Image (cartoon, rainbow, N blue to C red; front, side, top):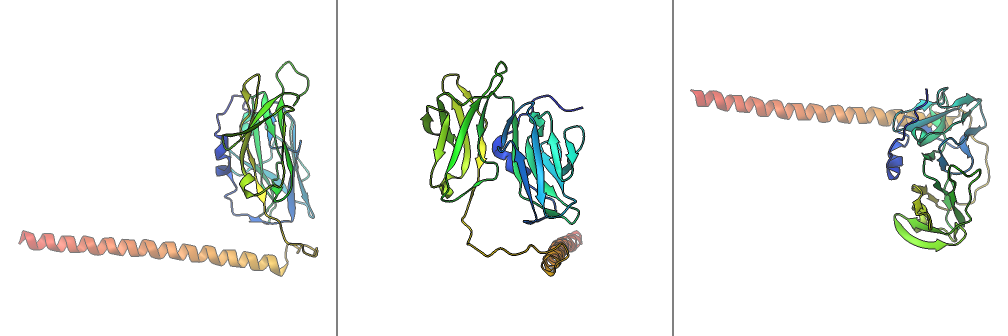
Length: 266
């Protein structure tokens, strides 16, 4: 049975749900989401797909209730490298990604499901420096058949008022790092506020000639795994030595204390 009660989530803390599993972020797979936005209303349909050059990818998620959870019946319908949520609930709020059996993972997409009649429609994958982006404030109450942006809306960045737009849309031009942050909007006349939506800004990458991606068993991937394994081993050794040093210091101090106590007793 799907959880239907409202879960109060601090949406500024969504990124504490980021992937902390031991997976290697690669470009072999890209997670796409449809509709192409990060905020959804309750009961909406959400489709997540892993676009990859190989099979065996699974959509996974972290939420406030579940960690490293595969797409499964009960909240989603698993498909061939995809996942369909037929009826979204606030409990589906979290971060989603693709992962394969080799421990490789894709990009992360943040999903927020809210009961508010107002949502902020923004790019779920982030934007590149220098580009333009349109943020849309969408309103739909329980009596409306479809959403609308045909109203005056106030827009905010990190809680600070930016400006009011008569048509419910705000265009940001020449995106820079200062544009990154949490955005929200408000229906001016109904005084209804959306939840916050994170807008990530990516730096421009240097133009490079395309090259074929390495295979799963390529020397490049093997070398990365060996390096990661060595780093984990060294970290364990360092922790062990630190614990050993701490224990010996405690033992010497305890022995000295006992010696002084014995002499004092004599």
